Length: 424
Image: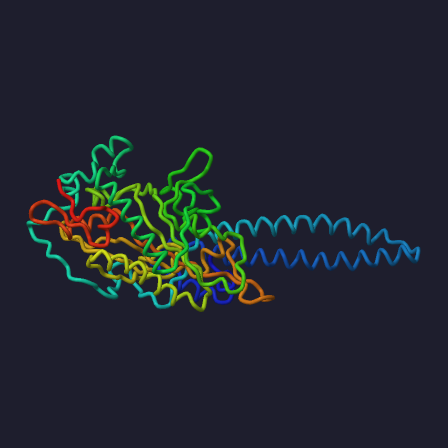
């Protein structure tokens, strides 16, 4: 949730910051917020003034009664002002509720360092590794996976529908190997604390991280209003919902391995072959909690942790900084990690590393106490995929394929798989 103090201080500058997102629908609630905030504060001020006036009159009534003087006129005024006070309190509560409802629809302000523009303005920060040439002899992952018996997409679709892959044999072991490798790396080398969160969460939890109310149509929802998680970011960030972290707790990081579920519609058949776009997928997620002054450094650190996975796997990748018009609703700044897939002939996103500043913390009520006795402040939250499995698997198969139809297993995964290559 945005900080209303920033809006009050300079509505024009606030609008200009939101306008960087190049989304007219994001601007529409801002003027409504200005009007609601002004009306709410006026109602609160009038209610408080009336209460002060009533207190003074009540004291005068008490004085008159003590002096055995008549007070009927003041009692009548108190009765009338009491009714007005109730109306003002109700009006203030209704305005406050509407103010909060509208505020939930306003996206985060882009970080000052984020470039302006739409997706065409995304900036390549660095490219790491040597790209394997996308020559005609290379097979795409869906051919490799099926010929090697690693996954069976038609039977997966038979079980649930398109976009729900079925892994089998060494393919299923590869999923397990990736989970173990990534969790071991992030806990042993990067210092994250591992958690295993629920896969179903409540509406307030999704509101806290910013998926609701805007993206409800992309969620899988149960009949009792619980939602399958779209990412482990949701439950892991909300572990500290409505809590105050003690002095000295920050910064720290949590890591979780979960399946993820997303209903989002595919783009008219684009990228729907194989594992490129699926409704269910596995992912290891990093979540960090930071003091505001340290959050930029924590973002760089966390991005490096995600990059380390690709480095250990020996995959060529690039880091993109997203422009303001391509940055997600809750994010202030995002770096995408894209891995090279030569069989598909494309760069594929395997991680988004984002800082949310205090946007999620305000929605979820996550604060910290800078020092003993000091007033609590909102934390900064950050997260990164490290990594999402489907496109990581695509890159492994397509980059490590051999002319004889086998696929060499990256060295770092061999101790988890027990083999050095996939064979038919």
